[in-house]
Length: 149
Image (cartoon, rainbow, N blue to C red; front, top):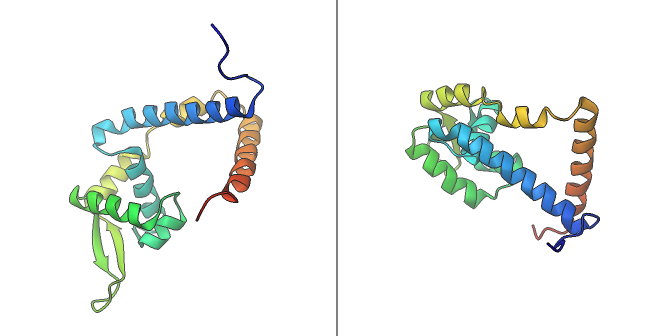
């Protein structure tokens, strides 16, 4: 069988990064299924919790790789699922923040125990993990110079 992507190429490293991300995403998705929550919703729930149980769309956008419009749609779904509630910052303003509901706090407490990604990453030593993080941060910093926003 012919080699489609040379293992020495930049394309192969991009392929491996994408494959690792995809496999870990699927593992997390499988673990989250009983909670009826997606990995992105779980990540957002964790961020809202770490921001004191409440956050604006701007704060969420700053702490994720998502735009405000995308987050607005996601938060509306999470509100329908009873995980967050929309609250006006003051009665006469259009500024909104989202607060975790009791169900949101309960779900957070369940999802923080999920271990699939930690278990997968445990094949790396502490030094390998630090090196991987450093290399990925370098790649991201360079790549961000090419993004349109």
